[in-house]
Length: 475
Image 1 (spheres, helix red, strand yellow):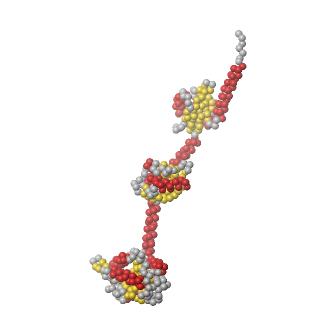
Image 2 (cartoon, helix red, strand yellow):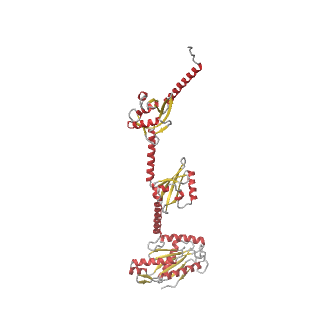
Image 3 (cartoon, one colour):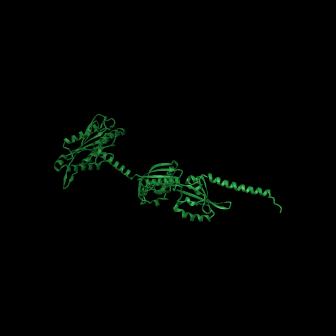
């Protein structure tokens, strides 16, 4: 039988296929060995065929420890039976699979320690043998970082929920994402109710367009601080200070809301206290009229205004007759009631621009401003006003079941005279009142020193002549 000589072309093809197979296996082994992740190759019976250096470094096993042994060697002892069942089921599938997403997987180190892992499985064939390659990633560091992030978020949430100031997060369109407990208490809304609301729904004073413009300005500047009013669920409102900061990479606005109600109340109480202090400083405690200090200040201003405006003013100096008798016979309480009634009558008859004051005891003063530029006309106006005051003060005063009669001695002077001062004006008025008093009281006197009662006189330069006009005594 003749010997068959091999076909040279076929031999070359066989050698080529053999070389390709060799190199393919070599490349696979090399790729597995140098891979930066842990890899173990398992056959269809669950026996380890190969592992790489990265797995040895991760779990401590070398090839002698694992090759030919069940892959469950890498599984914690209490989970090996379950793993065998799952592995047998997977052997009948053909697709890849990622394990450890949403569940906790663990691998057992050679020293017995257990580490958290994620595993990717992929089947393949080599020379007709079905194998499974498992890529194992230790996630201890990732879990540590995730735990740290979770702890940080829970701490921040605790801080925000226990902060005295309100806080909410909104997107760039102004829709609320979430709000802390403090803001829920402030607004009366629950967290679920606030989620999805617009910041304009919370504002009690601005229109939606105004709120939108302010939000746009905050987003552009990446921060903002302002005061406004927010609306509660029950329809009420409260003053707030808003501090906003933008997180550009997230497109979110972090908003801190401080309740200003207590501050506003404190400011109102402070203002009321200042007003009260001013009242004590410039008001008569018994009657509520201006006191001497305030009257002198206003008289100084009135002098300057009269000189600028070329007009006259007048001061009435009033002393109540028989006041001492009332105090001695009926007591100080009755005397105080009498003074309060006198103050009320003077205030009732005064014009808005005029000043009524109590200097002390039973002495009162009234300052009239804006009288005529003519001395005669100003004196006539002052006389007419003084006569009305006399009539008002001479009416009886009721005390329980009795009436007390009194009268007023009133001295009047015009101002300004040349080089006039506050003391000079008060001195003239007081002297005019004293002259009425020495004649028995119950009347008024216009003191016109330095004025010509019949001439038109410039208040900024009156002539140095004088006349005195006495009112008849009123008993």
